[in-house]
Image 1 (cartoon, rainbow, N blue to C red):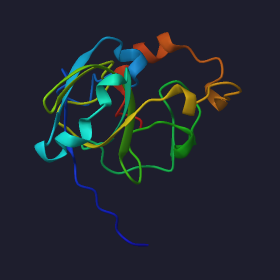
Image 2: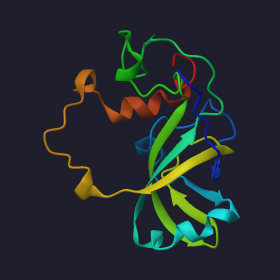
Image 3: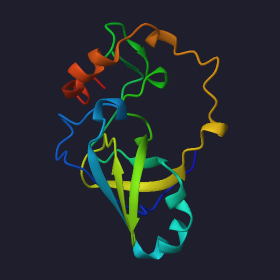
Length: 162
């Protein structure tokens, strides 16, 4: 195995100063506002991004350390394989969120539905394109029948079991 190294392209800002209390998914962070400070070297990469309503953010879970191969997810009482969950403690602590883009001002992107800890290093931005992400015939495995309201109630458990 060889080492792969990434360099952040910016920093994500949100009202969440600590891991505990940060919403566990964008659905639990509806209308929470935040921003991205993109490093000036990447300014030209923002061209044409303002035409998209949603962005996919890839980032480094900087508060996450260590991992287990089986975890009990917040929506369940049964241990599951790590790769069948969205637990933040992973062999490569990479996070992914879909957020709404409000506007771009220079190298600052103003976003909504932010479920990310303040100060998180941003690795990449991609436009969310529904055409490339068809949702028909999607299966959600052990999550079938789970309730989003339950997810909202258990947001504080994000880093305790994962």
